[in-house]
Length: 294
Image (cartoon, rainbow, N blue to C red; front, side, top):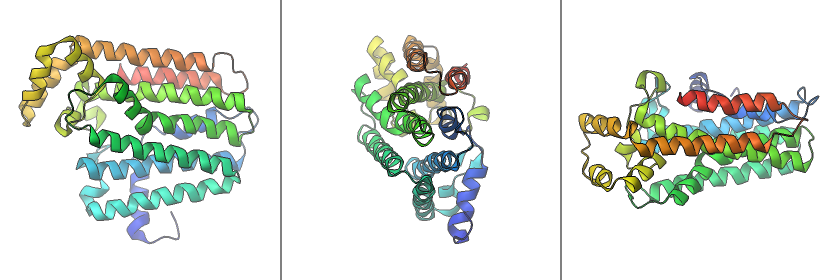
């Protein structure tokens, strides 16, 4: 971030310093062919996907009016939404600037397409606010854009800049897609069941925002009374907490978990016979997505 105005670089650095799982950069390195791990291009690719992810977090916090992330005030809370918008744009620009160092136009194109998916996923989510008729297919399409696309391109970039063939690229990208879908479903379950002290977010944030997620979709399909319950829930903390308690133990939430586990199984199958990359590490990441929920 050096060489840029502190008005942009300081909050950008603070966003990075707030921590996180760094899953996307890890996917870049684990998807690279063996013997390619010392390439500077891999470092550039790993940095670029994390910068894109950071940018989306800063922008999402504006849209969601979020005050805290990872136990710290968001940029929007600390400096206002206008400043946060500029910081998010700065992070996006730095991501592509960093990726050009890899010297592979196809890599830049892949990340650009994923960034468009991210934007589209966010638009789909906004358009579907409070839509209790949202289908599972529409939810999955949204998850692809908001989450799975960047997981997939992280894997693809690792294989691509590391010199793997197209078949390996496609295999690891499929792994990333399935892991990303599982990750998002588990994240949506955690919104209902998670401990705020561990997740860093208030429980029931999706309910407050009108974001309809898979546990809710499946619960309302299985139980018409739940649909009435959701439609009538108040906005106060007590009402939201009570509904979260009901949904946390509902069959719809258990069914959503099974969907996520199915995606994890598909991810594992995608790389089951790929022996040119760090397959064991990728499988450990897939298992870690499950452990995060447990």
